[in-house]
Each structure stands twice: as C-alpha cells, then as structure tokens.
Length: 71
Image (cartoon, rainbow, N blue to C red; front, top):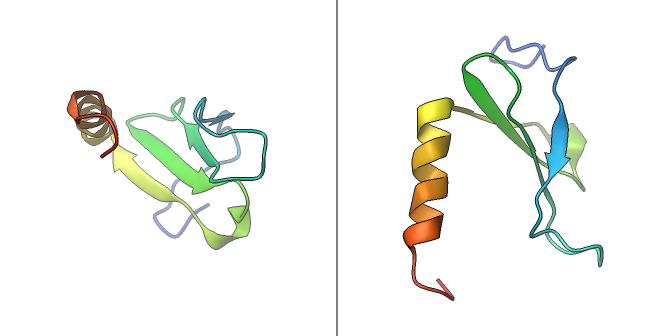
C-alpha cells in the first residue's frame, strides 16, 4: 500500500514511449487501477509515486498534445 492507501501490487507499469533506452529521463505509468493513474520514476522507484485521477490524467495528456513543439 502507498501512503494514500492504494494497493500497487496489481499495477501494470508501462514505460513511456518517449523514454529512450539511453538512461535518460524515464517515466512509468500504471493506468489499470480503479479510478486512478499512478506515475513513478523508473530510475528511482523507491522514491514513491504520484497518483492522479483519471480525469486529471486525461487533462494532462490533452494539454501536452496541444502545447507547441519544444515547450
């Protein structure tokens, strides 16, 4: 369990397609848990996770798609 009480034992972690294999910035996301999306740094998994609502995650992704290139 995380401090927020979410059981991550069934989390299906996926590495971002933008995370290269060169040891750069790597983000993992679990979207299979009920009502939430969980994000963590693949290089520092022990440091914890960020949990957001599905609606919040959808707004975040939409804002990335709308942002001008390079920002």
